[in-house]
Length: 300
Image (cartoon, rainbow, N blue to C red; front, side):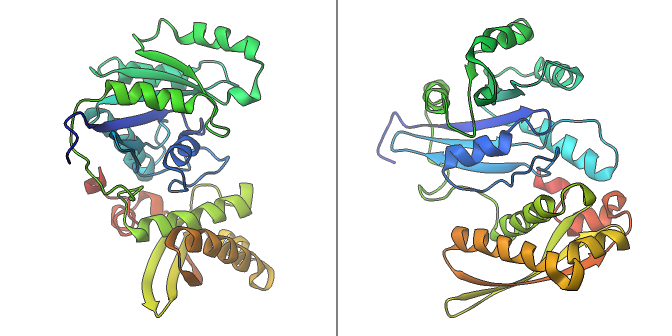
């Protein structure tokens, strides 16, 4: 690295479930690396997205939405989110412009009181409210923490995101380029592929299959220009399995077709995707299965 003024660092994105953290991360890095759904608690692991320019590199850590755990998977998600606060140079606290400050926000604020790093308040989804309402939302939070800056943004449309990135860049210390310029995430291909498949399950099955789904990649093999992927969708009950498969396999085919297109876009390869569905009762409370499906304490 020839530039002595190069800036780099790590920035955590925290907030209640479903405030738009993954949408923001995908916007910043310019492609989908974090899955999106209108269901809360879609993100389960810390997902690192890498933003690189000629002058700076920011490694964003998208954390699971902070919430009260209901099982061992929930414990994993909470530990993952809070651990991110110990390893960063700045924190983005994201709130939803369409909802009033609530108990979940207050819980996060309490955790952030122990963080000795610059904290930015991001008021997301301003595209869904009147501009006249923004100041009233800022008033709800202005005394909660000594915020470095407040940015009303739209992660979906990009409003004020470049200005936020500029401010963050100026705040970061001089440092190395941690990742190659064309790398946008530190997660292995298997993880991203499994997440893209899980996203389609969430999108297509709506309320019938909430958060009892995991995806395990059985194998990835490249044959000439074709990528052959075999994956298993894990559910907790026979009824859920029937929903995911659908009549005559119709739902599973739709899920596979949609996931394949996203995987092809990400990998730049033609993909043959083969999916199975398997029942593992109460897998979210079994440590050995959590480890097998990628929810390992070593991941954070």
